[in-house]
Amino acid sequence: MGKDGLNSITNQIVIAMIAGLVVGIALYFIMPHAAYLKTYLVNGFFNLIGAIFISGLKMLVVPVVFVSLVCGVSSLSDIKAVGRIGGVSVLFYLATTAIAITIAVSLATIVSPGEGMKTSQMAGEAMVKEAPPFVQVIINMVPKNPVAALAQGEMLQIIVFSIVFGIALTMAGEKGQRISNFFNSANDVVMQMVIIIMKIAPYGVFCLLAKTFSELGFDVIMPLAAYFFTVIAALAIHFAVVYGLIIWVFTGLNPMLFYQKMRGPQMFAFSTASSNATIPVNLENAEHRLGASNKVASFTIPLGATINMDGTAIMQGVATVFLANVFVVDLGLGGYVAIVLTATLASIGTAGVPGVGLIMLALVLKQVGVPVEGIALIVGVDRLLDMLRTAVNITGDAAITCVVAKTENALDEEVFNDPKAGEIKA
Ligand code: ASP
Image (cartoon, rainbow, N blue to C red; front, top):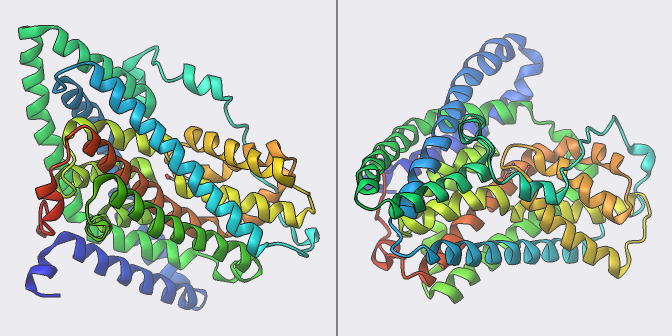
């Protein structure tokens, strides 16, 4: 890595991430002998900086999505494009999720994790919440009160309101133009705020990861190793093969450049385990590093963070097969089809925040008759898997953003092909 490389914020975050990981794991072993480290360093300093960093990211989500989407929609010359972009992206999001879960279920069937495992190994109570019914998810997309939607960060509601607002701006002609100009300037301002957060990210990422890894129970992984590593293998296949192919086939561009430019947002997703919190960074990256225009990315990135969860679906597929093995439930072909369908729908209903994928797993388990209490069995290893699957989730959002941008003739290939484009200096 040359001097130039060290100057880039992405490389600094990589270094911070590795350092956080190493320090965290070291602390995991040292802490039992030095309680003050836990009190002052992990729960004190690391917690403070990490929490401020996450709050800073979350602070930007609503302003970025609202302002950027209003800009995006009002810049579309014809309103039909909104429907087209929406339709194509939802189609791709659903298809990639279905592929993800098919890979997961196939791999899990081959590896067959959990076979012969005694159910008596089950510990603790499952924390299961009821998943909202699908129809309700659709009804809830329209906000009764847009201010409440913004205040509570209801992503789908904000998306719907921003689209209607953006369309109305165009329809209002000259008067709308003044407000459009205001939003365009505001967009530049919120993007600068994203850059500020990215500049402090190395410190935030270091503290978050050091804290998380100092608390992870590594000893719980071994009894569940087959489950744990099957999820990781399925995530890796989907990540490396499916997204690469999607970029290559549908945009004709070099997948390696895509992966290289996704490192930044992936690290944010990994350390926060939240697609939602990663929206501002993923959006900034999609526009300035990948070359997707604002009119597409401002719509597809927040939408993807809300409804497209390939990594989560993968975990749910493997978990269902694993628990079916543990509880000796015969899934049959119908069961596998049901898993693919319900996990795809569950992924739409899963909010992009830490750990929700596990709650939505209840929906899939119920559908195929596997005891929901089984969730208690895998909860111990979920944190690490959550971090990994969130990185996959947001990579999917960016890949589909490139594809939709390409179909709309809104992908700046010069930017995409320039390895240094949009790079933020530390
Ligand atoms: N943490 C995931 C995300 O934000 C959701 C989940 O699988 O729990 O994308």
